[in-house]
Length: 422
Image (tube, rainbow, N blue to C red):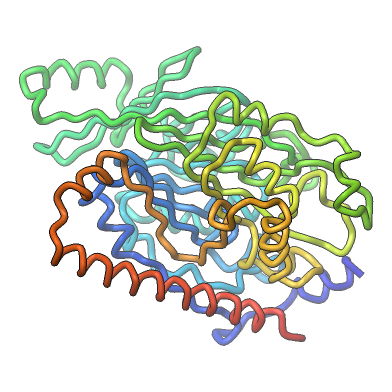
């Protein structure tokens, strides 16, 4: 059944009518630089596992599958039913960091990356990827070795972004426990960076340094792009932390392997991956997390490497996430044999069973911008807002909530349309 459905759908050719429109809040994304002093974290889901994290002045893009297919060839394979919501990367702010979890085609898409690097402002971004992928990037793109950092599980990196308003240039440095690497817009050596900093000693008022801690964390998955490279590169998740906020990106991961038709009450009989509890103890709690909830199939053949909604909730609890959004669903067809709406529906029902508030792990629509304000911002707003402004803000908030509710309802309607009989 699984192979028959997958084979039948693999060669489907998409017309313009097949794609489902997506509205991305580009204004909020591009206005982040204006309001970043008030925002601890800003997160936008672009569908599947692609996400844009804006934190402490950094624009970080995760696992972007933003082209039409997740496949080595353009005419067959899993394909995006949902548009990405923007025409070109020129509509997005400059990407500072590209972070990849593993090399599967739905997470490492060369078509998307080629388009992204064509945009001049993105050519000097820095890449974080698991061990074994650096040579893949160097072979295909005009990148310098210093632009790519490979991470092993439990590696920690401190990233510093130094802004010089007089030249409008950014310098990014990365430091790990074992070595220090200089990563910046013009690929300077460590000595060049030190020289730059030394020459600016008299202009310290013009320089601001913004820091992040980036940690490569374990995942239960695999890697492969061809016939002979199975598990030759690592797979991982990532933890991001600033002084004001923290974020966890699971990438692709399993939680435990369970047999077919296993009742929920029997799941606890089977061993599960211990990494998530360790991640929570070392790096948690997290303000936001992106956790996969699919794909789901008629059998449990993939449960060792893909979580469903039931075990995604366990990950949410073990990593100590305050707010999680589900990823890896509702975007790409030909990934599973169960209806594309199955995973979010299961998530809602399992959240109710677990007794957790729905807002802790809730559906976000593609293009929706989620914001976490800094604690000081909350205090200042409560002190300084006047009555008239408060009324306007409440009105805008109500309108925004109504719009988000309409978007979520539209999302479900569109997903039902996607699953119509072919």
